[in-house]
Image (cartoon, rainbow, N blue to C red):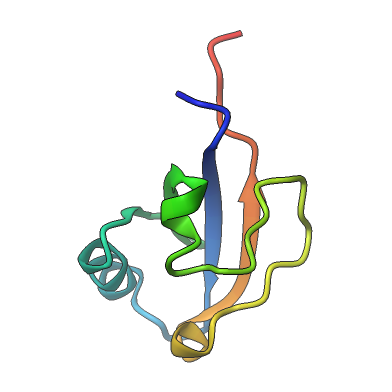
Length: 85
């Protein structure tokens, strides 16, 4: 895993379907996994920026939801990737 690897949690809007959101993100070439609160998206920061252009890769608390996802996503939360150390 490189230092450019990032994981983000997409909190889905009430009534949104996480599986459908995963399908949309996978069609865009992203690694997406449904979770109870939404979707976990992981990958290289440059690839993630193709869908989430406001990601910086640095510690970030507030990431704006892209317009095309606003109907299904209410929040974007970067998380530090798990490491074996």
